[in-house]
Image 1 (cartoon, chains in turn cyan, orange, yellow):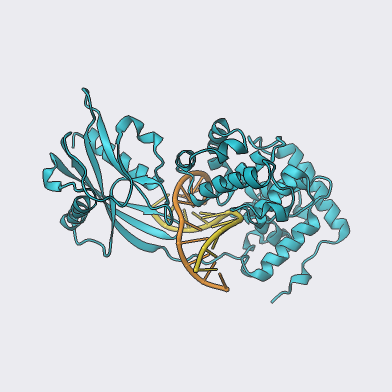
Image 2 (tube, rainbow, N blue to C red):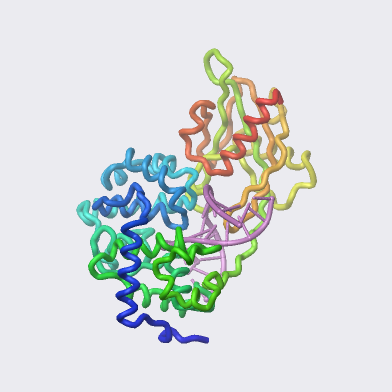
Length: 385
DNA sequence: AATGCGGGGGA
DNA sequence: TCCCCAGCATT
């Protein structure tokens, strides 16, 4: 196995890589809403959203966020439910809670000013080595390195680094090389150039080596197989999970034919923490058939909120859908129950429960899976049941 | 060191 | 449709 010390850039080559990369970045960088601003708050929000999430996905979330929360004080004083509402659909909802807690920390303990060093930044919850390096270099011009998935790939190819990219040995190599390379004059631009190159040129599949500004320094290219680096990581299999769900409706108050949905809030920790969902019960085993799934969700409605499925005006079956998480394959068995207006909820409720008018369903924080269920129900209603 | 935690884009 | 991508906290 290679040892950490064997991968290096000689001083001349280091200078050449810096110059080539910065020149390329100046000409080709994408115009992103969090660029060309000197506000650690904005850099921090962008980097929190960008964790495990691609640029194209983040752009609209970032814009909406800045409109609502222009500074760290506004986040610190906000309610977590409003933060989750802006975050819905972005995934990894813990990040939203980290942002909330860190904002309070900055206001309460740092007098409203973000720390400017890597160590100081890492005291914020949700800010690890990557994010601290990003904020310190981009917002504070500190000559510090950063390593994300893009940088791992670029460095693996430049130095033809084999082995598991997540191994501690390779991680330490990446950080050492990134620290060695980072341009002391323009650290933020250099770090963004590395990531931008990985995202647009040095891509996982079919890298565009012919237009790469650092091709002549790339040992992977030289070997004729840039996409052999980094070594592919083995992916863990998805855990199967089975749930029964019902879209529970009743007529809204007043005239018109508007409906209200019954929503329940998920627990404040674990999967999709604190998001709202249609009444959902997890099943121990995959149900034998539609009646068994209907039975399970019917029993849950009765037990959790005192809704007797026998009292429903209509019961429907919406079929089965699969939703994939990074670590779970969730099979959803979907029912629909329509109750008369007068129906009341009973019982000691473990979770917050509320009726939401159909027109306001967008204003409630729900996961992508929840949106899928709602769309299935809507399509089904449009067909006249 | 291993595990939990979402969702979207591209082949 | 499947395959691939991407940081941090907790234990």
